Amino acid sequence: MTTVQRLLDQSSSALDTTLLKLGATPITLEMIVKLIILLLLLFWLSGKLRVLIADRLLVRTKMEVGARQAIGSIVRYLVLVVGFAVILQTAGIDLTALNVLAGAVGIGLGFGLQNIVNNFISGLIILFERPIKVGDRIVVGDVEGDVVQIGGRSTTVVTNDNISIIVPNSKFITEDVINWSHNDRKVRFKIPVTVAYGSDIDQVTGLLLEVAQQDPDVLQTPPPGTRLMAFGEQGLEFELRVWSTTLIHRKGVLISNLNTALYKKLTAQGIEIPYRQLDLRFRTPLQTQAATENA
Image (cartoon, rainbow, N blue to C red):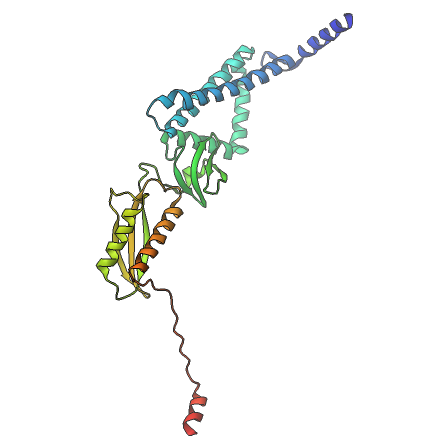
């Protein structure tokens, strides 16, 4: 029993040992352990609070998923800032003693952490201005996919191949971003169709519209339309224009379905779809031509 008591006393003495002083405040090992535990608890609770707000409370409203996620993230950041200040005060650390440390950290952020700070500020801009939001279909650089999460440093985009791509938030502020569903999920697609010269223009137009009207993923309002765009080298170049809201994240499927239906419909009606042809002409060399004439 005496040995156990001696060990406890030694442990308590070690925890109370002053490691350094921050102003007039002594920093002990016990204080550091408490700070680490409280900070981990703060991050865990703030994450749970964000999920509670975004996925539980705001679900009952008519607010869209992107707005819910943005509000949840902003509340989490506020809780982290306030909680961090409260934890420091509770631990007995005078915040005024951190002025020098804050200045040093500021210099470090200015030089060594430029990208991290840039991405974090860009993330705040995205959350407030909402140029993109969770659920949007976007294209930035070579990345195309659906936004599934907007974090403090980066945004997660999932492609059609189910590959998650982590994009730094600064790219959405400094580069051109194509947002297919920013204001409305209704998007127009253009499908080029070429038919042989001599085809009946009115018949082709009617068949194109008929195919569009029969596709379940094509909206009837606004209605599909056709245009005769050019007299091409191979034939008459038409363009079928359709609107869709269901396949903007899988536009290749919509275009493939329409092209398949168009090919079947046009060939069934005897309308030729031309393909590229090359005519080769062989010219007889002059010497061979002269020898032929003298023979």
